[in-house]
Length: 592
Image 1 (cartoon, rainbow, N blue to C red):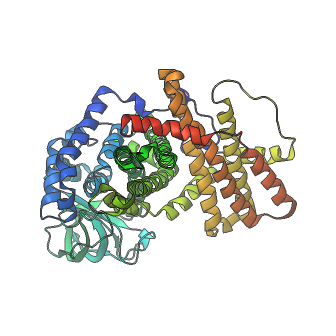
Image 2 (image 1 turned 90 degrees about the horizontal axis):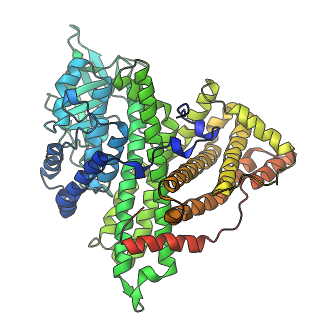
Image 3 (image 1 turned 90 degrees about the vertical axis):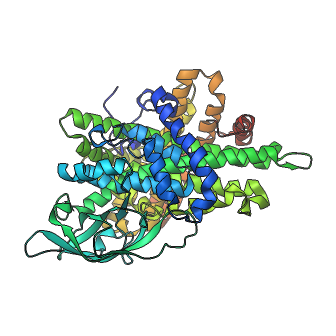
């Protein structure tokens, strides 16, 4: 394999299909783990969804206990702490499969992710020995206390305070946290608070049974109604000094790194939800008769099914591409002598921009899928008797969880620009090249031959469009760019579309190398429709950005460049989508 790609480098470096991981390559053991998770949902979760949403006393903790018996709470926990010690990619697969589990998926993800990981990655040996085996076995449940009434996106502005006692033996903790998932039954909280007047947060491991910890009643929510969400109060709680997690003032960094992992995991969970909703859409479209035939025979319905599949396939391609990149980064850091937990955090941190891309893409694809799912069900889609109503409501939180999609869009551009400033990513060199290309006569000559030659040319041009707009915005707006949120959003959307398009194209190329072209025809349709559709989106985002800061000759030249970089040849997307839908209809489920 060539040198592993670095985070953000996809914009300036060509990736080869052989260098990415695709879901078609799962090994036997991974498939078995996924099947165990799928069976668990079928047997234990889906039949109880109404009871879960009614917050039946003790039901959710008992489901987590049953999942723990199958090892589902310790998939990526090292064996020495009672887990299975599986790699990051396998962890993502279990997140995806269980992501179809509505409120249960939220409780599970909060426990194994933001609940367990801060202690696993930042705890000292004594803390890990004390807490991790109990969390992996499910005998203790975990929650994460970051958000406060006055601090949502601005996490570091929290008011919860910890003061060290005179004898130095414990911290006295006072404050309030809100929107705490699993709050109603958690035994262990990771709580973020400022020590004295520190500038940055610190983190503490707090047990719910300690004196001074109290809870508000359960929040009433639009969706994920079965997920326990409470306010947690700390009133003079004595936290032993040895329960400070990591160093003083390191809490903000812990929060950011755990959020990076949470973002990519959320994309995986949304993917599982999307596949489940598509399967339900297809089954209903095949069963529902109107005007004497199943509605799956009609073009308008086939368009919806085809588009649901394209968006889901794109998110899946990008999610596992990135997961393997993270895995490779972890392996290379460990080979250099770094210990596993540190390497994992560093590996994820390297791909923080991609994690933000995936969080947005996954949550927005799921929202599209469930929205069209309601539409396919028609009147029944609006009825609580049918499954789409719950899927629609439960989906909505994902665009707010783990940092809102607006914040994540800002972060994508900010993280890429910071990498460029630090010299970790050469964006300016390629951006200058594109600027020079605008001055030259366009190259209309014949490109490379072969399958996807056209699409690869499109992709290379989309990257040029991103570099042109991002480079000119950075030069023109300088320090004001951070305040121009609309422009940052435009650039982020161009980056997201480009990453999804490239990930999908590479995956389909690899599928062809495994199955041959004839067997892969429908995958070729998916890639071609996506790359064709994205051209117009990139053009619109780019135009909106350029129009807001450029003028005169510069404006005209960049708009001409943008037009050139988003030019595509005609494609019959109607027929391609119909072929994609036909595969779903024939399989009677999501089958890609």
